[in-house]
Length: 171
Image (cartoon, rainbow, N blue to C red):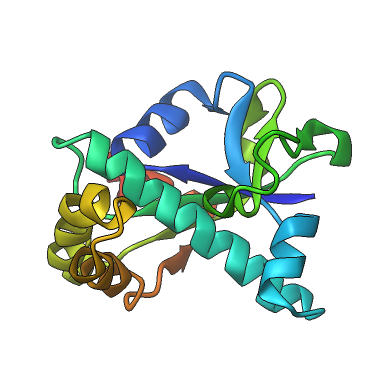
């Protein structure tokens, strides 16, 4: 099963240093029954993209909680055994938790298929979205518009070999 793990650049640097994602159980996003029902598509690529976007929103939440992190969303795509990820039945129907799964144990970063990261030119919009997130959660429509502005920026695909360069540890 492919899961999408939300991180920040410092979180990615830590995962690179330790070689592991999460310390289990940790939150990730995947194509869940609730996500399929919400998205109304049978196209697996569209559903995977929706799960990636849910993880990008979770990455934005991590950025809102860490004022020191560079304002770039980060999502790691990794394949885990089907039994390693499960939907929390108490959160399965919560619209805020669409696609959310809990991954048991740790996952080796070496198993990652790819890393998705904002370009530097997204930082201004991502910073504004992180600032507006709390107000958007309270129903402020103007704040939600700002949060949605971050989604106008596509996360770029990077091979796992590029992680050292992404976190500033490359040559």
